[in-house]
Image (cartoon, rainbow, N blue to C red; front, top):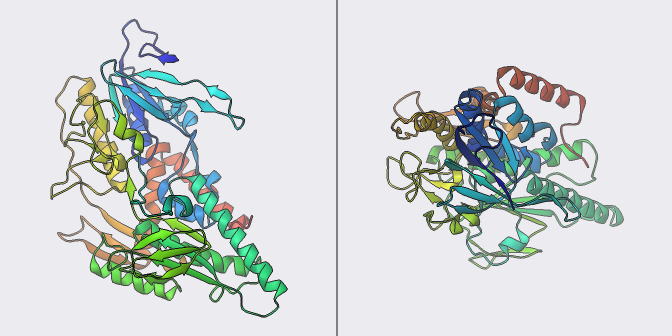
Amino acid sequence: MTTIDRHTASSTRTAPHRIVIVGGGVGGLGLATRLGESLGKSGHAQVVLVDRSPTHFWKPLLHEAASGQIDPATHQLQYAVQARRHGFAFEQGALQSLDRAQHRITISATRDEDGRDVLPARHIEFDTLVLALGSVTNYFGVKGAADHALPLESVTHAESFRRKLLDACTRANHVRRVSGAQQVQPVSINIIGAGATGVELAAALRDSIRLMHRYSLFALDPERDFCIRLIEGTDRVLPALSQRVSMRARRMLSGLGVDVLTTTRVTEVRADAVWTHDGQQLPNDIAIWTAGIAGPPVLRVLDGIEVNRNAQVLVSRTLQTTTDENVFALGDCAACPSHADGFLAPRAQVAHQQATFLARALKCRVGGEALPEFTYRDAGTLVGFGDVGTIGSLSGLRERPVFVDGWLATIVYRLIYRRHMMTVSGFARMALDTASHWLRRRVHPVIRLH
Protein backbone atom coordinates (compact mmCIF):
# COMPACT_ATOMS: atom_id res chain seq x y z
CA MET A 1 0.00 0.00 0.00
CA THR A 2 1.49 3.32 -1.10
CA THR A 3 1.18 6.35 1.16
CA ILE A 4 1.08 9.78 -0.46
CA ASP A 5 1.92 12.07 2.42
CA ARG A 6 1.71 15.82 2.81
CA HIS A 7 5.43 16.21 2.05
CA THR A 8 5.06 14.81 -1.46
CA ALA A 9 5.64 17.41 -4.20
CA SER A 10 6.90 19.94 -1.65
CA SER A 11 10.44 21.22 -1.79
CA THR A 12 10.21 23.07 1.51
CA ARG A 13 11.12 21.59 4.85
CA THR A 14 7.75 22.49 6.38
CA ALA A 15 4.93 21.07 4.32
CA PRO A 16 2.04 23.39 3.45
CA HIS A 17 -1.51 22.72 4.54
CA ARG A 18 -2.89 19.86 2.46
CA ILE A 19 -6.47 20.03 1.15
CA VAL A 20 -7.79 16.81 -0.38
CA ILE A 21 -11.00 17.00 -2.43
CA VAL A 22 -12.72 13.69 -3.25
CA GLY A 23 -14.97 13.94 -6.29
CA GLY A 24 -14.48 15.94 -9.48
CA GLY A 25 -18.04 17.00 -10.31
CA VAL A 26 -19.39 20.54 -10.57
CA GLY A 27 -18.45 21.36 -6.98
CA GLY A 28 -15.26 19.36 -6.55
CA LEU A 29 -13.57 20.42 -9.78
CA GLY A 30 -14.64 24.03 -9.35
CA LEU A 31 -13.24 24.09 -5.81
CA ALA A 32 -9.97 22.40 -6.79
CA THR A 33 -9.49 24.88 -9.64
CA ARG A 34 -10.14 27.93 -7.47
CA LEU A 35 -7.96 26.72 -4.60
CA GLY A 36 -5.20 25.64 -6.98
CA GLU A 37 -5.12 29.11 -8.51
CA SER A 38 -5.17 30.93 -5.16
CA LEU A 39 -3.43 28.68 -2.60
CA GLY A 40 -1.73 26.04 -4.73
CA LYS A 41 0.26 28.28 -7.05
CA SER A 42 1.28 30.56 -4.18
CA GLY A 43 2.52 27.63 -2.08
CA HIS A 44 0.20 28.38 0.84
CA ALA A 45 -1.50 24.99 0.48
CA GLN A 46 -1.22 21.78 -1.44
CA VAL A 47 -4.45 20.90 -3.23
CA VAL A 48 -5.20 17.33 -4.34
CA LEU A 49 -8.25 16.23 -6.34
CA VAL A 50 -9.28 12.55 -6.24
CA ASP A 51 -11.74 10.96 -8.67
CA ARG A 52 -12.41 7.44 -9.95
CA SER A 53 -12.52 8.68 -13.55
CA PRO A 54 -9.73 10.40 -15.52
CA THR A 55 -12.18 12.89 -17.07
CA HIS A 56 -14.88 15.35 -16.04
CA PHE A 57 -18.27 15.65 -17.74
CA TRP A 58 -20.97 18.15 -16.76
CA LYS A 59 -23.85 15.95 -15.57
CA PRO A 60 -26.70 18.27 -16.72
CA LEU A 61 -25.64 17.38 -20.28
CA LEU A 62 -26.13 13.64 -19.79
CA HIS A 63 -29.62 13.65 -21.31
CA GLU A 64 -28.14 15.08 -24.53
CA ALA A 65 -25.44 12.42 -24.56
CA ALA A 66 -28.03 9.68 -23.91
CA SER A 67 -30.20 10.91 -26.78
CA GLY A 68 -27.20 11.09 -29.13
CA GLN A 69 -27.33 14.83 -29.64
CA ILE A 70 -23.79 15.45 -28.43
CA ASP A 71 -20.57 13.44 -28.51
CA PRO A 72 -19.43 13.18 -24.87
CA ALA A 73 -15.78 13.02 -25.93
CA THR A 74 -15.96 16.62 -27.18
CA HIS A 75 -17.29 17.84 -23.81
CA GLN A 76 -14.96 15.98 -21.46
CA LEU A 77 -12.13 17.61 -19.55
CA GLN A 78 -9.04 15.67 -18.47
CA TYR A 79 -8.33 16.06 -14.77
CA ALA A 80 -4.58 15.66 -15.21
CA VAL A 81 -4.47 18.50 -17.74
CA GLN A 82 -6.70 20.68 -15.57
CA ALA A 83 -4.46 20.02 -12.56
CA ARG A 84 -1.32 20.95 -14.48
CA ARG A 85 -2.83 24.23 -15.66
CA HIS A 86 -4.37 25.33 -12.39
CA GLY A 87 -1.93 24.44 -9.63
CA PHE A 88 -3.33 21.29 -8.03
CA ALA A 89 -2.52 17.57 -8.15
CA PHE A 90 -4.74 14.75 -9.37
CA GLU A 91 -4.99 11.17 -8.09
CA GLN A 92 -7.21 8.63 -9.82
CA GLY A 93 -9.05 6.13 -7.65
CA ALA A 94 -12.29 5.55 -5.77
CA LEU A 95 -12.65 6.41 -2.09
CA GLN A 96 -12.60 3.26 0.04
CA SER A 97 -12.14 4.35 3.64
CA LEU A 98 -11.33 7.21 5.99
CA ASP A 99 -9.04 7.15 9.03
CA ARG A 100 -9.84 10.34 10.93
CA ALA A 101 -7.27 9.70 13.65
CA GLN A 102 -4.44 9.39 11.11
CA HIS A 103 -5.86 12.13 8.85
CA ARG A 104 -5.80 9.98 5.75
CA ILE A 105 -8.06 8.33 3.22
CA THR A 106 -7.58 5.14 1.23
CA ILE A 107 -8.38 5.07 -2.47
CA SER A 108 -8.73 1.98 -4.62
CA ALA A 109 -6.39 0.64 -7.25
CA THR A 110 -7.12 1.44 -10.89
CA ARG A 111 -7.12 -1.47 -13.32
CA ASP A 112 -6.85 -1.93 -17.06
CA GLU A 113 -9.32 -3.85 -19.24
CA ASP A 114 -7.56 -7.12 -18.39
CA GLY A 115 -7.94 -6.56 -14.66
CA ARG A 116 -4.28 -5.77 -14.01
CA ASP A 117 -3.36 -2.98 -11.63
CA VAL A 118 -2.31 0.26 -13.29
CA LEU A 119 -2.08 2.13 -10.00
CA PRO A 120 -2.06 0.40 -6.59
CA ALA A 121 -4.39 1.22 -3.73
CA ARG A 122 -3.03 4.26 -1.91
CA HIS A 123 -3.24 6.20 1.34
CA ILE A 124 -3.53 9.98 0.95
CA GLU A 125 -2.92 12.17 3.96
CA PHE A 126 -4.80 15.41 4.53
CA ASP A 127 -5.13 18.36 6.84
CA THR A 128 -8.53 19.27 5.39
CA LEU A 129 -10.77 16.77 3.58
CA VAL A 130 -13.65 17.81 1.32
CA LEU A 131 -16.18 15.16 0.29
CA ALA A 132 -17.72 16.06 -3.08
CA LEU A 133 -18.74 12.60 -4.25
CA GLY A 134 -22.01 13.53 -5.91
CA SER A 135 -24.85 11.04 -5.85
CA VAL A 136 -26.04 7.67 -7.12
CA THR A 137 -29.46 6.50 -8.26
CA ASN A 138 -31.96 5.68 -5.53
CA TYR A 139 -34.28 2.87 -6.66
CA PHE A 140 -36.26 2.97 -3.38
CA GLY A 141 -36.25 -0.82 -3.23
CA VAL A 142 -38.52 -1.22 -6.28
CA LYS A 143 -38.40 -4.84 -7.44
CA GLY A 144 -36.27 -5.36 -10.55
CA ALA A 145 -35.44 -1.66 -10.96
CA ALA A 146 -31.70 -2.00 -10.35
CA ASP A 147 -31.51 -4.89 -12.84
CA HIS A 148 -33.73 -3.60 -15.63
CA ALA A 149 -33.83 0.22 -15.38
CA LEU A 150 -30.69 2.08 -16.38
CA PRO A 151 -29.47 4.93 -14.20
CA LEU A 152 -28.18 8.16 -15.72
CA GLU A 153 -25.19 8.99 -13.53
CA SER A 154 -22.27 9.03 -15.98
CA VAL A 155 -21.17 9.06 -19.60
CA THR A 156 -21.00 5.25 -19.45
CA HIS A 157 -24.69 5.08 -18.55
CA ALA A 158 -25.59 7.62 -21.25
CA GLU A 159 -23.71 5.61 -23.88
CA SER A 160 -25.35 2.38 -22.71
CA PHE A 161 -28.81 3.94 -23.07
CA ARG A 162 -27.95 5.32 -26.54
CA ARG A 163 -26.76 1.92 -27.72
CA LYS A 164 -29.92 0.25 -26.38
CA LEU A 165 -32.02 2.82 -28.23
CA LEU A 166 -30.23 2.18 -31.52
CA ASP A 167 -30.47 -1.59 -31.04
CA ALA A 168 -34.21 -1.38 -30.30
CA CYS A 169 -34.72 0.73 -33.41
CA THR A 170 -32.75 -1.74 -35.53
CA ARG A 171 -34.84 -4.67 -34.30
CA ALA A 172 -38.12 -2.84 -34.95
CA ASN A 173 -36.89 -1.69 -38.35
CA HIS A 174 -36.07 -5.27 -39.32
CA VAL A 175 -39.57 -6.41 -38.33
CA ARG A 176 -41.05 -3.59 -40.41
CA ARG A 177 -39.01 -4.59 -43.47
CA VAL A 178 -39.86 -8.29 -43.35
CA SER A 179 -43.55 -7.66 -42.59
CA GLY A 180 -44.05 -5.06 -45.31
CA ALA A 181 -46.55 -2.35 -44.50
CA GLN A 182 -47.93 -4.09 -41.42
CA GLN A 183 -47.75 -2.09 -38.22
CA VAL A 184 -45.01 -3.09 -35.81
CA GLN A 185 -45.09 -3.00 -32.04
CA PRO A 186 -43.93 0.50 -31.02
CA VAL A 187 -40.50 0.87 -29.43
CA SER A 188 -41.42 1.55 -25.79
CA ILE A 189 -39.15 3.79 -23.74
CA ASN A 190 -40.14 4.25 -20.09
CA ILE A 191 -38.62 7.15 -18.18
CA ILE A 192 -39.38 6.72 -14.48
CA GLY A 193 -39.31 10.04 -12.69
CA ALA A 194 -40.55 13.38 -14.07
CA GLY A 195 -38.06 15.71 -12.46
CA ALA A 196 -35.89 17.96 -14.61
CA THR A 197 -33.68 15.11 -15.86
CA GLY A 198 -36.62 12.93 -16.87
CA VAL A 199 -38.48 15.76 -18.58
CA GLU A 200 -35.41 16.93 -20.51
CA LEU A 201 -34.57 13.38 -21.57
CA ALA A 202 -38.11 12.77 -22.85
CA ALA A 203 -38.02 15.95 -24.95
CA ALA A 204 -34.51 15.20 -26.23
CA LEU A 205 -35.53 11.69 -27.29
CA ARG A 206 -38.42 13.05 -29.36
CA ASP A 207 -35.97 15.35 -31.15
CA SER A 208 -33.51 12.49 -31.70
CA ILE A 209 -36.11 10.12 -33.11
CA ARG A 210 -37.21 12.73 -35.62
CA LEU A 211 -33.61 13.37 -36.60
CA MET A 212 -33.04 9.65 -37.15
CA HIS A 213 -36.05 9.61 -39.46
CA ARG A 214 -34.74 12.68 -41.31
CA TYR A 215 -31.47 10.91 -42.04
CA SER A 216 -33.45 7.83 -43.23
CA LEU A 217 -31.59 5.59 -40.82
CA PHE A 218 -34.79 3.70 -40.08
CA ALA A 219 -38.05 3.18 -41.94
CA LEU A 220 -39.95 3.77 -38.70
CA ASP A 221 -42.53 6.48 -38.25
CA PRO A 222 -41.31 8.83 -35.49
CA GLU A 223 -44.84 9.22 -34.09
CA ARG A 224 -46.56 5.87 -34.62
CA ASP A 225 -43.64 3.50 -34.05
CA PHE A 226 -42.31 5.00 -30.81
CA CYS A 227 -43.91 5.34 -27.38
CA ILE A 228 -42.07 7.54 -24.89
CA ARG A 229 -43.65 7.38 -21.44
CA LEU A 230 -42.79 9.68 -18.58
CA ILE A 231 -43.95 8.07 -15.34
CA GLU A 232 -44.28 10.13 -12.15
CA GLY A 233 -45.54 9.07 -8.72
CA THR A 234 -46.77 12.54 -7.70
CA ASP A 235 -49.67 14.41 -9.27
CA ARG A 236 -47.60 16.54 -11.69
CA VAL A 237 -44.36 16.73 -13.66
CA LEU A 238 -41.51 18.83 -12.23
CA PRO A 239 -43.02 18.55 -8.73
CA ALA A 240 -40.22 20.64 -7.20
CA LEU A 241 -41.13 23.66 -9.34
CA SER A 242 -44.15 25.94 -9.39
CA GLN A 243 -47.58 24.87 -10.57
CA ARG A 244 -47.32 27.25 -13.53
CA VAL A 245 -44.03 25.77 -14.75
CA SER A 246 -45.36 22.25 -14.22
CA MET A 247 -48.54 22.85 -16.21
CA ARG A 248 -46.65 24.50 -19.05
CA ALA A 249 -44.14 21.64 -19.13
CA ARG A 250 -46.91 19.07 -19.38
CA ARG A 251 -48.50 20.91 -22.32
CA MET A 252 -45.13 21.04 -24.07
CA LEU A 253 -44.54 17.33 -23.49
CA SER A 254 -47.99 16.50 -24.83
CA GLY A 255 -47.24 18.60 -27.91
CA LEU A 256 -44.09 16.55 -28.43
CA GLY A 257 -46.05 13.31 -28.27
CA VAL A 258 -44.74 12.18 -24.88
CA ASP A 259 -47.19 10.02 -22.91
CA VAL A 260 -47.21 11.51 -19.39
CA LEU A 261 -48.48 9.31 -16.56
CA THR A 262 -48.76 11.13 -13.23
CA THR A 263 -49.94 9.69 -9.89
CA THR A 264 -48.49 6.43 -11.18
CA ARG A 265 -46.18 4.55 -8.83
CA VAL A 266 -43.89 1.90 -10.32
CA THR A 267 -43.92 -1.33 -8.31
CA GLU A 268 -41.77 -3.58 -10.50
CA VAL A 269 -39.51 -3.31 -13.53
CA ARG A 270 -38.96 -6.29 -15.81
CA ALA A 271 -37.01 -6.62 -19.03
CA ASP A 272 -40.20 -6.51 -21.10
CA ALA A 273 -42.64 -4.57 -18.89
CA VAL A 274 -43.03 -1.94 -16.19
CA TRP A 275 -45.70 -2.70 -13.59
CA THR A 276 -47.56 0.04 -11.73
CA HIS A 277 -49.44 0.17 -8.43
CA ASP A 278 -52.84 0.00 -10.16
CA GLY A 279 -52.00 -3.16 -12.09
CA GLN A 280 -51.01 -1.62 -15.41
CA GLN A 281 -48.46 -3.59 -17.42
CA LEU A 282 -46.60 -1.14 -19.64
CA PRO A 283 -44.57 -2.61 -22.53
CA ASN A 284 -40.88 -1.98 -22.10
CA ASP A 285 -37.94 -2.02 -24.52
CA ILE A 286 -35.80 0.41 -22.50
CA ALA A 287 -36.35 1.73 -18.99
CA ILE A 288 -34.34 4.49 -17.38
CA TRP A 289 -34.66 5.58 -13.75
CA THR A 290 -34.55 9.31 -12.97
CA ALA A 291 -36.79 9.23 -9.90
CA GLY A 292 -34.39 9.92 -7.06
CA ILE A 293 -30.84 10.02 -5.75
CA ALA A 294 -28.85 9.06 -2.66
CA GLY A 295 -25.31 9.53 -1.45
CA PRO A 296 -22.74 6.94 -2.59
CA PRO A 297 -22.79 3.81 -0.36
CA VAL A 298 -19.19 4.38 0.79
CA LEU A 299 -20.40 7.36 2.85
CA ARG A 300 -22.29 5.00 5.16
CA VAL A 301 -19.06 3.26 6.23
CA LEU A 302 -16.67 6.20 6.61
CA ASP A 303 -15.05 6.44 10.03
CA GLY A 304 -17.38 8.41 12.32
CA ILE A 305 -19.09 10.43 9.55
CA GLU A 306 -22.79 11.00 10.26
CA VAL A 307 -25.21 10.57 7.36
CA ASN A 308 -28.98 10.78 6.90
CA ARG A 309 -31.20 7.97 5.63
CA ASN A 310 -30.26 8.84 2.01
CA ALA A 311 -26.55 8.42 2.82
CA GLN A 312 -25.90 12.17 2.55
CA VAL A 313 -23.31 13.62 4.93
CA LEU A 314 -24.77 15.85 7.62
CA VAL A 315 -23.01 19.22 7.66
CA SER A 316 -23.35 22.51 9.50
CA ARG A 317 -23.70 25.93 7.84
CA THR A 318 -19.91 26.07 7.54
CA LEU A 319 -20.17 22.82 5.50
CA GLN A 320 -18.13 21.01 8.15
CA THR A 321 -19.35 17.54 9.09
CA THR A 322 -21.15 17.23 12.40
CA THR A 323 -18.49 14.91 13.84
CA ASP A 324 -15.17 16.27 12.51
CA GLU A 325 -14.20 19.89 11.89
CA ASN A 326 -11.45 18.77 9.52
CA VAL A 327 -13.91 17.11 7.12
CA PHE A 328 -16.22 19.15 4.87
CA ALA A 329 -18.84 18.06 2.35
CA LEU A 330 -20.59 19.79 -0.54
CA GLY A 331 -22.94 19.13 -3.43
CA ASP A 332 -25.31 16.19 -3.82
CA CYS A 333 -23.56 14.08 -1.18
CA ALA A 334 -24.07 16.73 1.53
CA ALA A 335 -27.20 17.29 3.61
CA CYS A 336 -26.85 21.03 4.12
CA PRO A 337 -29.48 22.78 6.26
CA SER A 338 -31.59 25.35 4.43
CA HIS A 339 -32.97 28.52 5.97
CA ALA A 340 -36.39 26.92 5.70
CA ASP A 341 -37.09 23.47 7.12
CA GLY A 342 -35.09 20.51 5.84
CA PHE A 343 -32.07 20.45 3.57
CA LEU A 344 -31.04 22.09 0.34
CA ALA A 345 -32.10 20.23 -2.81
CA PRO A 346 -29.36 18.36 -4.70
CA ARG A 347 -28.90 20.75 -7.63
CA ALA A 348 -25.93 21.85 -9.71
CA GLN A 349 -26.31 25.48 -8.65
CA VAL A 350 -26.13 24.46 -4.98
CA ALA A 351 -22.84 22.64 -5.61
CA HIS A 352 -21.52 25.60 -7.61
CA GLN A 353 -22.32 28.09 -4.85
CA GLN A 354 -20.90 25.82 -2.16
CA ALA A 355 -17.66 25.44 -4.13
CA THR A 356 -17.39 29.22 -4.45
CA PHE A 357 -18.06 29.56 -0.71
CA LEU A 358 -15.49 26.92 0.29
CA ALA A 359 -12.84 28.48 -1.94
CA ARG A 360 -13.09 31.53 0.35
CA ALA A 361 -13.72 29.65 3.59
CA LEU A 362 -10.73 27.31 3.22
CA LYS A 363 -8.45 30.26 2.62
CA CYS A 364 -9.68 31.55 5.97
CA ARG A 365 -8.99 28.14 7.53
CA VAL A 366 -5.45 27.98 6.13
CA GLY A 367 -4.86 31.52 7.39
CA GLY A 368 -6.13 30.70 10.89
CA GLU A 369 -9.27 32.84 10.58
CA ALA A 370 -12.82 32.00 11.66
CA LEU A 371 -14.99 30.28 9.09
CA PRO A 372 -17.99 32.08 7.58
CA GLU A 373 -21.39 30.41 7.14
CA PHE A 374 -22.83 29.36 3.80
CA THR A 375 -25.92 31.12 2.50
CA TYR A 376 -27.68 29.75 -0.56
CA ARG A 377 -29.31 32.12 -3.03
CA ASP A 378 -31.73 30.42 -5.39
CA ALA A 379 -31.16 31.72 -8.93
CA GLY A 380 -34.13 29.78 -10.30
CA THR A 381 -34.49 26.70 -12.48
CA LEU A 382 -34.67 26.29 -16.24
CA VAL A 383 -35.78 23.17 -18.10
CA GLY A 384 -34.85 22.63 -21.74
CA PHE A 385 -37.15 21.08 -24.36
CA GLY A 386 -34.74 21.03 -27.30
CA ASP A 387 -35.94 22.89 -30.38
CA VAL A 388 -39.30 23.60 -28.74
CA GLY A 389 -37.68 25.99 -26.26
CA THR A 390 -36.94 26.45 -22.57
CA ILE A 391 -39.15 27.31 -19.61
CA GLY A 392 -38.60 27.92 -15.92
CA SER A 393 -38.23 30.62 -13.33
CA LEU A 394 -35.52 33.10 -12.48
CA SER A 395 -35.01 34.43 -8.96
CA GLY A 396 -33.26 37.55 -7.76
CA LEU A 397 -34.85 39.82 -10.35
CA ARG A 398 -37.81 40.57 -8.07
CA GLU A 399 -39.00 39.52 -4.64
CA ARG A 400 -40.75 36.49 -6.14
CA PRO A 401 -39.47 34.14 -8.87
CA VAL A 402 -40.27 35.27 -12.41
CA PHE A 403 -41.61 32.81 -15.00
CA VAL A 404 -39.56 32.87 -18.19
CA ASP A 405 -39.76 31.20 -21.57
CA GLY A 406 -38.90 31.96 -25.19
CA TRP A 407 -35.56 33.25 -26.44
CA LEU A 408 -34.49 34.76 -23.10
CA ALA A 409 -34.92 31.48 -21.25
CA THR A 410 -33.08 29.58 -24.00
CA ILE A 411 -30.12 31.96 -23.95
CA VAL A 412 -29.80 31.82 -20.16
CA TYR A 413 -30.13 28.03 -20.24
CA ARG A 414 -27.25 27.72 -22.71
CA LEU A 415 -25.11 30.19 -20.79
CA ILE A 416 -25.25 28.08 -17.61
CA TYR A 417 -22.98 25.45 -19.11
CA ARG A 418 -20.66 28.09 -20.54
CA ARG A 419 -20.39 29.69 -17.12
CA HIS A 420 -19.32 26.36 -15.68
CA MET A 421 -16.70 25.95 -18.40
CA MET A 422 -15.45 29.47 -17.81
CA THR A 423 -15.11 28.70 -14.09
CA VAL A 424 -12.89 25.68 -14.68
CA SER A 425 -11.12 26.74 -17.90
CA GLY A 426 -11.11 30.53 -18.05
CA PHE A 427 -12.79 32.80 -20.58
CA ALA A 428 -10.40 32.24 -23.50
CA ARG A 429 -10.60 28.44 -23.45
CA MET A 430 -14.35 28.57 -22.90
CA ALA A 431 -14.75 30.82 -25.96
CA LEU A 432 -12.60 28.54 -28.12
CA ASP A 433 -14.48 25.51 -26.86
CA THR A 434 -17.81 27.16 -27.71
CA ALA A 435 -16.60 28.00 -31.21
CA SER A 436 -15.38 24.44 -31.80
CA HIS A 437 -18.73 23.00 -30.75
CA TRP A 438 -20.55 25.42 -33.08
CA LEU A 439 -18.32 24.46 -36.01
CA ARG A 440 -18.68 20.76 -35.26
CA ARG A 441 -22.47 20.97 -35.44
CA ARG A 442 -22.13 22.61 -38.86
CA VAL A 443 -19.80 19.92 -40.21
CA HIS A 444 -21.09 16.72 -38.57
CA PRO A 445 -24.63 15.33 -38.27
CA VAL A 446 -26.51 16.74 -35.29
CA ILE A 447 -27.36 13.20 -34.15
CA ARG A 448 -25.00 10.28 -33.52
CA LEU A 449 -26.09 7.44 -35.79
CA HIS A 450 -23.68 4.72 -34.72
